[in-house]
Image (cartoon, rainbow, N blue to C red; front, side):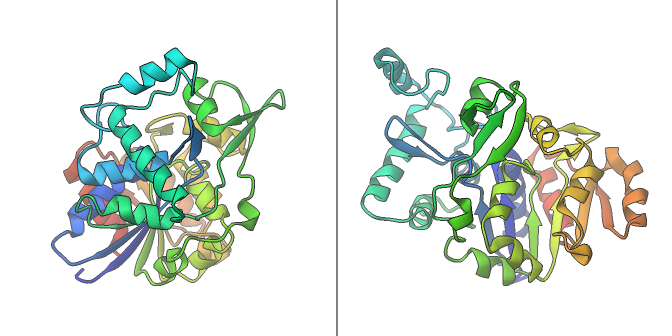
Length: 317
């Protein structure tokens, strides 16, 4: 698969593990890998700009991530967060590691110097030999807001991290996204790829905001081939509270329901091929009867080798 061009739409830990596996699978073949990353999780906190999904993927590719916690840097200290709590600043339940805070400070300084989010991502990615191009979905700030049952609004990070998605969500919104445009290079990366992969990331708050940026869904319609990897294994989410997100938009927590949520390109949806886990093999005949190109693969990314095997399966026609 020499010189193959692959573009991945991704966010969160699942996206980071998949992209790391993809790089490992193709590292000896001169592949061109672009990752379009969700920025709906972004926020301003204590005067600095945080981009959790960008950083999760960056740290994983650089090999400096905290694999046990699933976020932040390995070998962290938390002296600054402790001091912020003493001052009553920031969110006491949202801990920023000192190394991670260095990234946020660098990003914020560059933004205040006039760089775009795309330029900042490029500069961050140049520190380590990460082997892929990271692109934010847009240079526009479109943070995710969660409307809960009593009508109040929370930033996604407050709903997710502080309340652990226990408050029933009614809907998710990205204020300003209707006026956003894809970041430079995003549309070209999608339409110019040999294959585009929707990573096994949260379909609602990781992949959803990317698809909501005007122009990106249309670009997928012009892509050579679009493959999706189920984030649901055996009827359960792999990590986090994606089931609460799916419930809020009326989608069952199952591999076939998420497939139908994305839809087949032949019927005006997004996907040409859908990968489901071996634990969900019983769902494959039903999807196939609906016209899906559905494939059963081992989806657990418990180590780099398994992640690489899955990534190769996803991009193989």
